[in-house]
Image (cartoon, rainbow, N blue to C red; front, side, top):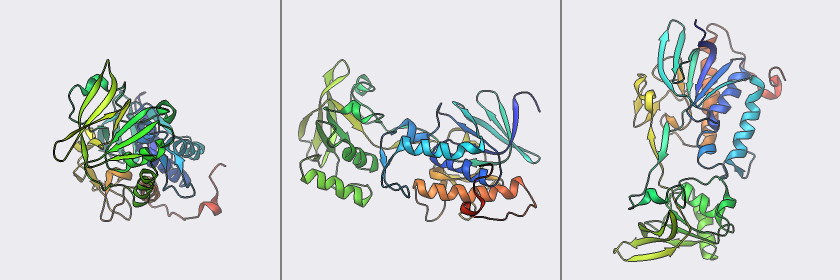
Length: 338
């Protein structure tokens, strides 16, 4: 073992909400964790893309901002002293004897008895709308994420898209922005039914304008600052929306990066797992969260939390072979060391 090699029980790839909760679950089973993430901060998409976006399906929290959720999960994991390797990718993964060797982009090697892949959708980036001169406006008046709602206060905001992000942000910005206009090619939205109903209710109350069925056609402005967004209906008839900001929410482009080369059961950028343990086709490697797939999979954070518990229990048998695990509820066992 060299000076740039460290050993641990479990290596967790991905420090998003599901990866952070997996630290807690592993810690409850007295397994030490090193955590690797390509971002220079914990939280994954919650931190990088929508820290102020409210999340409504976390148990016991009728609504919680993504950044606050990450703070709570980090606090929950802290008693188990996880070691974070941020701003680094796992470039190689090899099995040598009882150890998995993970080669990091920074040159360090982590040796672990078990590996939990909680990489969300892998390396991600926004799907950009095909608009002329789009790059001149990006980062100035066209944004693919909202870090602070207050930065949009009093502005005319056009939101493009019909999924959860578009609907959630339209609702969140109502009453903050001077005007919120939602552009979608259909009058039906691919969001949670309750949120779609709230969007419709706000539109009927005049707090949001639904621009349907329309699609983005062009941008107008100067020096990177929008003055208007041009849209066209299904008959190619144009309409001009006076606007200060455009938020295109057309999903994320997924790229597994080096993960795709590790010999796992990868199909369509997802890793197939055994649902009872979340173990992949390679014994000792588990996958949880959005990157994991099995029949009936629900892409919800709360599902990822449950998968984290299953993976931790599966990893225990790898880290401590032959040692019987006596399951106890946290209300009985408490937090080790607390």
